[in-house]
Every structure is written in C-alpha cells, then in structure tokens.
Image 1 (tube, helix red, strand yellow):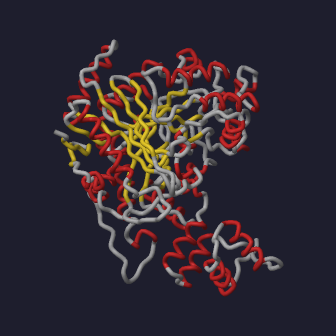
Image 2: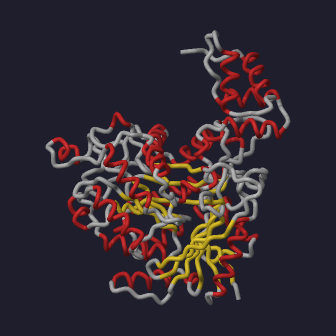
Image 3: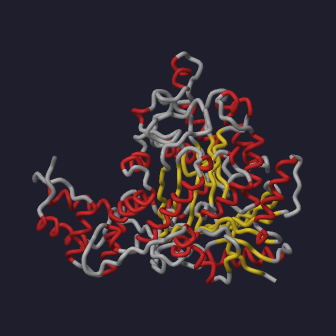
Length: 559
C-alpha cells in the first residue's frame, strides 16, 4: 500500500491548487501528478486535502470554490438535497416473490454487498448511526448535507411492528438534531455542546423544524396490499411524505406467477388512498420478469401513464436479475426463466424511457447489486448512460424529470429566461397539475410543484375503496375543501439553509413563485385553502409564506 504524502508536501500541493486561476478536476489531477510522479506517495484523499486546506486558512470564497470542485460523485447532491438511504433490521416479509434474494442477515430483497446494505450491516442497522455516518461521509467528500432526504428501505415497512417503526423514525430525527452539535462527531473538549435528549417522537420532530440539519423529506417503501387508512394515519404521524409502492407489474397473471401476493386492484386502491392524503406516490417496476417479455413490458409501462388509475410521480426501474439465494435461481438453472439482457434489454429500456412523461422522475434503471453477485441477467452498470446515449443519437425527446433537472444539465446562460409550464392530467379522483420553471426548450428544469385538486366527493365502483376513502377524510378533516401541494422542489447543487451562490438554482425565489401560482390557480378553481404535505424540516419555509400547521399538514386559507 502506498503511503500518504508528508504533511509539508501535501500543504504545498494544496496551496498551489487553491491559487489556480481555473480550479477544475482536470487541473487538480495534473497538479497532483506533477508533484507525486516518481515518488512512492499515493494521490491524497479528499478528507486529507480539506484538512490541509483548513490549516492554510485561505479566503472563504476561494475555499468554497475549492470544495465545490473536490466534491466526489456530485450527482449525490445535485438534486438540491442530500439523499440518505437507511435499512431496517432483518424481519420476516409477507411476500414470497420468486425473484427476491433471501439473506439471513438482511431484510428481504437485499444482499449484504449492496452499498447501502453494507453500511447498514456494519452499523447493526442502528438508524442513528446510519444517519450520522452517512452525513459525515458526504461532508468529508465536500458535499453540503444539511437538507436531508431520508429514504428508508428494507422489505415491507408496513409489516414491521409499530413500536419498532416509531423508535426507528425517532432515532432518525434524533440523529439529525444532534448533527448540529460538535459532540456527534466524537469530538470532546471546549465548545462541545451537550446533546439534548428527546423523550418522544413529536419532541424530536418539533426540534427538527429549526435544527441545523433538517429532514426535508421522508420516504418509505411498502407493498400496495398493506396500504389502508390505519397505515396512512401512522405514516403521517411519522412524518412520511413519499411512499414507494412495489407494483412490479400491471398484469395479474405475472403477479400470480411470481408469487407477488397482490393484484392490480391493490395497486389501484393504494394509489387512490395515498393521493387522497396528498402523498407523493412512486412505483417500482420490473422489466424482464417471469411471465413477461419485452413487448409486454413496454405495453405495461405505456398503460402506467395512459390509465388515470396509476400515473405515479416517480418510477424506479429494476430489470429482473437472478440471484443465488432467490427461488428464481432454480427456474434459471432448469430453463424455465430466461433474463432480459444485452441489446434486447437496452432497446426495451429505450422504448420505456421514451414513454416517461414530463411530470415523472426515473431515478434508477438498475438495482445496486454488484455484478459478481448476479448469476443471470443484466450486469451492465452504466445501463442508464447507454440508454440515454441511444435516445440522444436517435433524436428521441427525453422527458424524464431526472434527466432534465438543472443539477444534471449544463448551466443555462444569463440571457435564458425561465418559462412556466403547466401539465394537467386526471388521476384517481382528482386533477393533477405539474407546474415547472424550465428553459423554453424544456431540456432543463429549474423548479417544479405538484398541485392536486381532489374531488372530495369522488366515488369508486369498489365498495372497500369508498369506505376507506371515507375513513381517511374523517381522519384528516384539515384536507376537506382544500387543494394539495404534494411536492415543491428547486434543482441544483444542494445549498445550506440561508446560503447563497451566484450560479445556483436554489434560493432564487422560484419556489415562492410556484407557490403563488398554485394559490392563484386554486382560488380560480374554487378551493378555499391549500394543504402542503411538508417535510418536518421545511415547515419553517412554509410559515414564511403564510402557512400554519393543521394536523400534520401546513395549511393556508385563501379566502
């Protein structure tokens, strides 16, 4: 193993790097090579570089620029927030899906070598440690991580005991609240603040409204057959704002063959109930699974957006692969199952992505299973890049929100004026409006808002759905007669609360403009108020806009 450079040499390199007229990754790489070529020393790691820079104490603006160009995997925070993925402890899953791996040390469908799973396992699935260690890692690599989007994974969240779920979320908020104190990093001595103890979940949530590190969004994943009024009430108590549903297919025969354990009816009902409570509602969809083929996969994806019973806000695409601990391994070995791979898979994904509408975000095109763990199926780790490259070559418009968000696009020129676009579509008992500020060509999205006009008197053919809708309306009286803001997001590199940066999208007033437009349209449509399904850590922002806490929502009377 190569040794690190001596402190004097490291500081000399960093001092020269900070003074470069044009700081960039390529120029930094050349500088390290110039000084270290012919020596036994390895390239310095980012934490070492930042420590040396701090000792040199350069001007604040120069240091900020230097940190920006050192950021590892900038995509981690280029959506405007710092996503933190946590795993729950292993627990029996109600599903018997043939494609899910079964590992004794992991929750169902996860394996120990996946990045987030490996971190969780090393920390014994402690939610407090998972949050603090992940934030520390992001900050060591130059990222801003004070606006935390929590994504909780691990089988079926709704099947875990309620006491465990409350404890898990409380510890998550405890960790965020303590991150603002020096003691969280293990430092001791003068200036260290004592971490406050929070005795209830609500105490910890309330403290997070004004904490230095705030939970601005909270996502869980569950099965559609576990969504009911009681579960929705609990999700709101926990502060959940987004729900990922393991839909996997829109075909009951496929769902039956793969022993998924639910039907399309469950998926429709779950979508209706979640949208009725203003949740951001996302789907998991699995191309290439048993019983399907490329043509059927494309048809199901087309139906997902053509049929108003579905129309999710986000879709995670997970092409089916064979893992040794899944029942599907036996099907693969004896020829009952043939994975979708190679050119056929790429062409299928190109067709699927071409059907994604402007309002939908596709954050993933593969699972993070390491290639050596896959015994059959796709092992191309840059599948997304290949799909996007082919779409670009063929002139296929890429509407996927993730592809177009400002953090992933070249900076717009100063002369470009953002234009307001409004997409309208019907969706299970209401009308959705997707408001967005984009460049005129619609290749770069600067900010967006999801506005829902629910039909509070909507009736459905299914008696159980109608009965459950009645229960939800009774449980959340603050929603009656109100329009919903289900999501508000500005894109770009994550900034700290109160921080400004000349070339950043965030904090330029686009969020406020979208809220004003949403209020104007709501009044025009005859709604008396707007309710926002706000993350706990964003409540202070909505208070500045005249909203007040009503139940677990932020609400503003418009008339």
